[in-house]
Length: 59
Image (cartoon, rainbow, N blue to C red):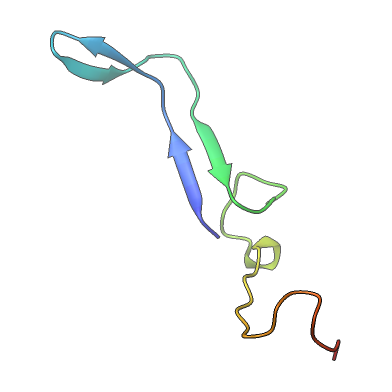
């Protein structure tokens, strides 16, 4: 699963500093149900195929 952790920053003296006391935002492309990314049963799946979605037979 793709995970992104995003922190808030502030501009300080020509650079950037992470804001104190502000929690991070956790982003994932598929719902996890938990912040813990070590639950592979909850990871999303991507399936690649030459068949257009909705045009093939279900197996």
